[in-house]
Amino acid sequence: MILFFSTAFVTAALAQPYRPNDKQQALEWAIEMLMIAGFHSEYNNNSRDFMLRWETPLRISISGEYTRNDMAALKRFIKQLNERVTWLPDVSLVSSEDKANIIITMANLDELIDYEPDYEEGNWGYFTFWYDDYKINHANIVIASDVTTQEERNHLIMEELTGALGLSNDITEFSDSIITQEWTTLQDLSPLDWHMLNILYEPWLYPGITANEAYSVLMGQ
Image (cartoon, rainbow, N blue to C red; front, side, top):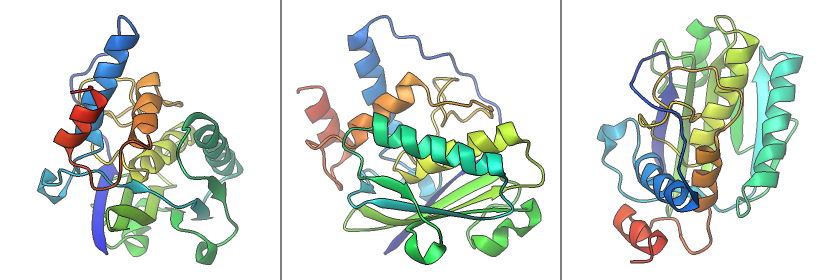
């Protein structure tokens, strides 16, 4: 099993809202952004050039210092994923970590390292995932509960889970993406994000396909 990780933290970058002129441009931009977000990592020297995704049902647990509203935000996002990402395996909430393959822990900022050994100091949200045969099979997410507002935690729950689904690299081109490199408190995924997730899980792509191969398939070349 190979370790793979990314983060969410406060930074700044130049980006524009996602405003395609038509459906064709929307598709082309989504494919271009998927080449960045779905085939590379924010860390590991950005050396990966193949796709990773889940092929089995996702079972999510949440523990630690979470609020009722944190739980509500998580349930809402799980419902959206099941409804809006057509070929994504089923996503559900489970009652304990031993039943989960995605574990979310909410804790004080200075305690996040206790729940994720590869955590990078200063980040408010951080995820790690493991994969075998190019298929993601486990993910660990930590989110700071003490320095964040409810709005910020809502955002981080969506951002870190989106990364753990396979969109593991930030993008800099569009400011309203949940995985934009610029720090935001967006409360919903953008149409671009949903488009990327749906393409990532299309059945005519497969775990391990390279970026060039996927681009040719998606662009009909």
